[in-house]
Image 1 (tube, helix red, strand yellow):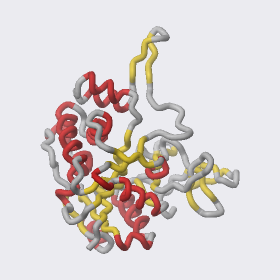
Image 2 (cartoon, rainbow, N blue to C red):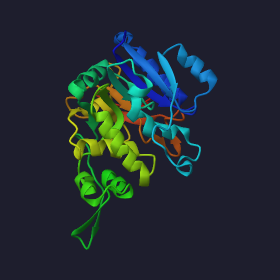
Image 3 (cartoon, helix red, strand yellow):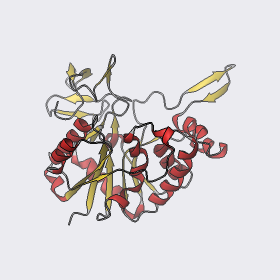
Image 4 (cartoon, one colour):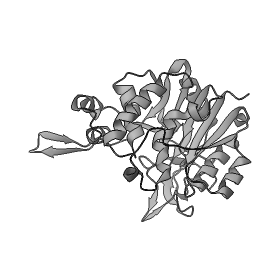
Length: 303
């Protein structure tokens, strides 16, 4: 019986990315002891037939917290903003859960080991969106040269979600936590904290981003015990491009000591004009190699 599970979600449009994520997981022999489960937010029957040959379970994602229909507007993939906070309800037969967004893929199994280790004893395993090379952490509009109007991601979402000014201020300059990759044990109190906060953020705020704000509240307001993992465990390429090691044929961090990227995450897209690499697999960008060459590369798995 497999004790650990990796879970993701996709609709029909993001199926190619989901399929690549699964292939990246299964490219490691260690994956044989880890279950893969999928939440279906609008996959076609043909797509599910392909997935059934590769994964352990597929369940239909639901609105685990009631959301007004006008907010949904037919975008079933928005269920990912709710259902990921209820993973033990969907797949109850596992002890540790690792969520990976479908627009991410596994480049180094050590990152998977770290996430499953990080969530022991009820802790949340997650990565803050900050690290060497990040030049802007929060946007601020300066008024009269001295007065600042805060535009940080946490603060903006907190104000819109009406969680209270005192709580919004606690989040204003807290390092943002990306919820695209995280781990929790089945019996962790983190699930209840997250669900409680998610109910609050969904009442007034947008669906998209609500789950991220809720987990930031759990960490920075509820003081959920958290194991913060290094940036290469959830490398958001739109924030900072990686480098490529031509000798080892792998993506690495752009600064010394050039650690290997564990999980490559294409959140927010990698753009060439109006073309997003997540949608158009032919999109390539110029990145530097460790061998000081400029090379044209896709950041998608296997390309």
